[in-house]
Amino acid sequence: MGKPFLEVEHLTKVYPGGVRALEDVSFEVARGEFVVVIGLSGSGKSTLLRCINRLVEPTSGRVWVDGVEITALDREGVRRVRREIGMIFQQFNLVKRLPVVTNVLTGRLGYVPGWWSLVNYWPPGLVQQALDALERVGIRDKAYVRADQLSGGQQQRVGIARALMQEPKLILADEPVASLDPATSHSVLRYVEELNRREGITVLCSLHFLSLARRYGTRVLALKEGRLVFDGHPSEIDGRRFREIYGEDAVEVEIA
Amino acid sequence: MRERAWRAVMLVLAAAAFAYGWRVTRIDLGELATKAHLVRPLVRDLLRPELLERVPRVQEVAVPVSLGGGEPPLPPSRGPQVQVSSRAVRVGQEVVVRGEEFEPGRPGRLVWRDATGAPAPLAEFSTDARGGFQLRVRIPDTLGDRGEVVAVVELAQTVWRPSETLRLVAERMVETVFLALMGTAMGVVFAVPLSFLGARNLAYGPVGLAVYGVSRTVLNVFRSVEPLILATVFAVWVGIGPFAGVLALGVHSVASLGKLYSEAIEAIDPGPIEAVEATGASRLQVVRYAVIPQIVPQFIAFTIYRWDINVRMSTVIGFVGGGGIGFLLMQYINLLLWQKAATAVWAITVVVALMDYLSARVRERVT
Ligand SMILES: Nc1ncnc2c1ncn2[C@@H]1O[C@H](COP(=O)(O)OP(=O)(O)OP(=O)(O)O)[C@@H](O)[C@H]1O
Ligand SMILES: [Mg+2]
Image (cartoon, each protein chain N blue to C red):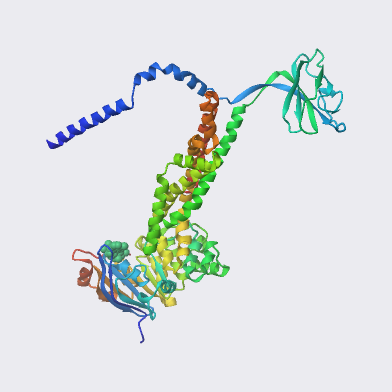
């Protein structure tokens, strides 16, 4: 085996207020893994994911994705690698007043000339690709509806289609189902899982519920107060480990 | 205990302040009653704006004549007829004007109308029992090489029409609305770029922050200058008139719109910005797809609201030379023409209420 697909080395993030959100985090991910990041609220999950595409500037440490040292790139370089890293958010982060299809098309912005956006021009080929992406997540019929007219589950599927539009090598999903009910959560995660299995897209996904982590993850990373406290197969998390990650009083909740 | 002492001191201080204020502003509530008779005619006139005027209906016949040329063609006419003894005349020549088939026994007048349409009285008459008249008049000194002899006979019936004042007020009101529109437009043109530069959440890096600081300062300085003072300055600069008003309102609008716009930008949801940035989009693309769609409704609402405010403001600005209805109103007031002033006041009230209503409706629709 050569270099790992994703490599995080001694990653530390201290926010301006002095909060140490990540503390010397190191791990490697092979191509095609479905890695779930768990941890209590405030443990640094979002920060970790955002350091990988540099939405958050790491304080120290290094990150490689597919052989490129992300932490060494200038602005333009960051822009170029971001094109191939899809991101899915807890709050979906769609542009609410734009139609669904335009939201999906924004996934392609990194590849098109800047002046096209002044006139909102999209070549028919890309529009077709966006419609196909919507077809894959089962909401082709909502393409020309305003994004805020959709239910939460539908909006997250638009979020997935937007990431899909990037033809990404890596998907970062920050608690993609935390705002959804259990049944909808599964339907959304199954789309992510399918991208992982069928296209071999590597997934790094933070989740609240351990049961979901067990169901979808091929591997689990656990963060506690910014430190990596577990790295292994989901089945290795027993009662003792669970209390280590979530604290003594925690009880595991099953999500159907 | 200490708190009670404090309260007592504050009470004494407040009482002293009010007592002093009462004296220096020479408040005398009694005057409101004893001098009520002075204001009564004013209030009465304000309640009687000059809206419509009653004018007699007239029969009017115009006969074209030429000065130093051949007789001009006569337009065909039905009803009352007028003949002029000669229709190729020179200045000072006497002509006989005969009319028939007018309303009998009514007062009338003969008028000379020159090539520019300016009237000059020639004679007055009454129609006889058969509706005719005959007069000898002299062609007056006149400009141009043609003119008209016009016979006007007043009938017993009268008609209502908008008063001269109302027409003038309406004209100035339209001017005011457009003055406000142009001022607003000028505000928008400069406020939009300034607001993007002056929005904290779009300011990246040290350069961005410096630009942010400068834009904010510019907006604050502009905003602290009273539009009345701006209008006075511009009235001196470009002369009294609507253009001075446009400039004053424009400068003031830049500041107030810039602040509202940048606050709208600062209040947007950062989520979509983050999401679009994460796709590898450039700064420009992020603004286009994540910022602008979020702010357009507010921008439209603020702009219409500003126009609405500017219409109000332009009336006051007119007082100091900014043109529009305010200037007219000030003239009426200075000449103590209360009924005419009332016409202007009512027009302002109606238009402002209308603008207020319409702008509220439009704002409802866009958000
Ligand atoms: N922009 C910021 N500025 C300062 N502190 C921050 C910032 N973002 C996050 N933090 C702090 O960093 C720590 C880690 O936050 P982070 O959002 O990464 O945690 P998380 O595991 O994603 O939590 P959650 O489950 O609530 O989303 C928290 O203590 C948080 O308060
Ligand atoms: Mg988080």
